[in-house]
Image 1 (cartoon, rainbow, N blue to C red):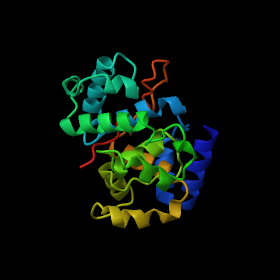
Image 2 (cartoon, rainbow, N blue to C red):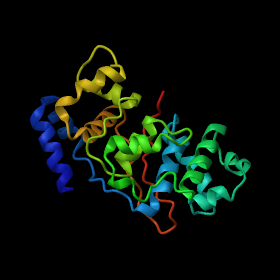
Image 3 (cartoon, rainbow, N blue to C red):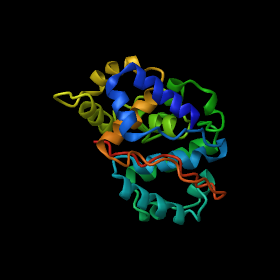
Length: 227
């Protein structure tokens, strides 16, 4: 919590709007990188959340965990027919994405165990080779699963809308416009993103649930839907 408090105080010092957000919404929880063995399950959960509102994404993810017998691993995914994964509520594209991720991890093409040592942009480049994993998915994984401090997911509508409301903009900025607007908040833009989500939705993106030994590792928040 001390790190989160320090970052919030530093951002508040830089801008009066953020100072108001800190006073209103408090200090974000400190994020820590999940264990290497849980990163596959974490990324699967982010894939489940693509383009869905939080409740729907959590329901589908819960059914998927049940289909996999409570153990979200590459072996468990590859052992199930695609139809069983689809029966959990995954779209055809997401079934393909989860299976491609499992196959690449199983064959060492995606090294989730070592990805924590890469710089942010290198993590994005490593993950987008997976079918159905784009920049947004990689950035949410960076923010919530690897605990990186300077992730700024401008492709997320919630971040753009929250920034526009907080700073009194006349229109929601485009991803390119928003990218430069937050330069003065480097290297703590992950915290700024958290406040933008809070502005849009008082609950904000859900933080990681308590980790269990089942290796489901629910670390990716079900963030506001991406449109």
